[in-house]
Length: 311
View 1: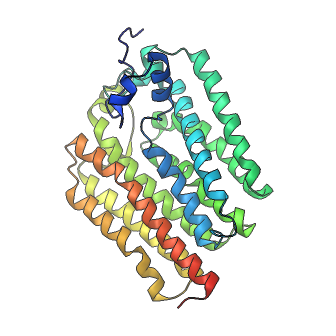
View 2 (view 1 turned 45 degrees about the horizontal axis):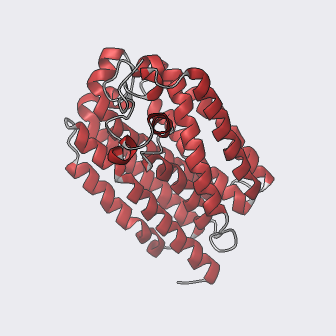
C-alpha cells in the first residue's frame, strides 16, 4: 500500500498543485473519479450537446444541457472508478497509472464499489429530465461500459469500443428532441465514434512502451509506424460523418462550411503531433475539448438556421 500522502496523484492531473493541498483521502477520491482531469467530462458532454443543438432543441429543451453536463461528470467518474476496479492489476504495470488510488492500494475495492454505486445513482437522477426513449437509450449504454475495460485484453482496438461508449450521448440527445432515431442521428454518432478513436489513439501514445511490456493492446500499438496516417484517417471520417448529418438537416453547401474551423483544428493536431513524445500527445489529446466546442457551434448554427429559416 502507498504511504506517501500524494503518491496516488497521477502525473497527468491538470490541477496537481491544488489536489496535493487537500486531505489525502479526499484527494484520492478526486483522483479516482478523474475530477482533477475534466477533459473527459467535456469529451463525453459535447456529442450530446451537439445532438440537441442539431435537432433544433437548444431553446425549447435548454434544460437538457445542464442535465447532460452533470450526467457527463458523474457517469464519466463512475466509468473511471469501474475501469480502475477492473484494471487495478494492469495499472500497477504502467508508469502513468501505477499510482492510481486502487492500483496503489490507497483506496480499497470495497470503498471504490460504494463510491461507484453512489455516482451511478446520481447519474440515474439526471435522466428525470429526459423522455422515456432517451432514458432507456442512456441506460442501454451501461452494457457497453461494462465490457470496455476487458477490450484491451482481447482486442487491438479498445479505442473503437470506447468510441461506441463515449459517443452514446449523441443518440440520447437526438431522441430526447426527435423522439426517435433519424439518419442525422446515426451519422452524428458515427462521426463521434471516429473522433473518439482518433483522439484516444493519440492519448495512448503516452503508454506505448509500458503497454507493450504489460501486454496491453491499443490502437496506438496496432498502428505502429502509421500512427499519424491512421489518426488522420479517423479524424477525416469524423468530419465526413458530421458533414453528412448536417447535410441531411440542412442540405446546402453553405451549411458544411460550419465544419471548417474544426477541420482546421484537426489539421493542426496532425501537423504538430510528435508520435515519439508523450507530453506532446497529451496536449493534442486535451485540445479535443475545442473540437467538441466547435462541433457544438456548428450544430447550433444549423439548428438555429432551421428553427428561424435563416439562409
